[in-house]
Length: 267
View 1 (cartoon, rainbow, N blue to C red):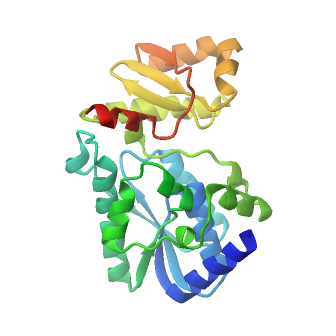
View 2 (cartoon, rainbow, N blue to C red; view 1 turned 90 degrees about the vertical axis):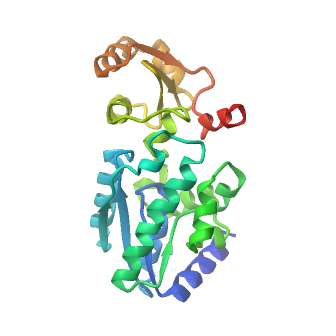
């Protein structure tokens, strides 16, 4: 079945001929960018947008991925949009409209016909308000159109021996902050420093959700028990307090994608 999806994907990319790949550095957009580059049948460039709420590590890894594979790539710097400074419940929609409008302007200025992104079929089964913005702007999603799931993408990356196959999702830092909360640069820095520390301590994919001066850690399966039983526990507590948190808690439910979205029905 995956072979059929690959054929569909290659056909779509070949038909588009000229496009900008919205390249976040995550698993989906990395696969899309790599596949588009490898078929050699299109004029393309990967474009990464750097904003204050995207982790620096994600930008660095995007740069390294493109450079290591000889892929044409550039970065656009964008300041914090005032329309999402208070983290509204439709933040994702507003943000996607803003970012992809920038990509469309870049494409038009540089002679590319389309902008494409790494949305896959699994994304349609969860809360993704940004998808409406993509539809409104006419953004193409070849992985979705070809029927790729997240598992398909990871399997293909594994077959091609690309280490990014096992990379955990990072997502933008605004997802760590409750809705209707004014976002400060200090908040973003604290979250980023805390998560980078946890990555380096061997807990990739851990989310640091901020609630005032409390850090709520959502861990991937197996990590919660490891933190509780490990000598790292005291080091983690002390290190996050040095970063600026007063309290450090472990969420017993562990990591859930979009856990903050559960609050929307209560707003």
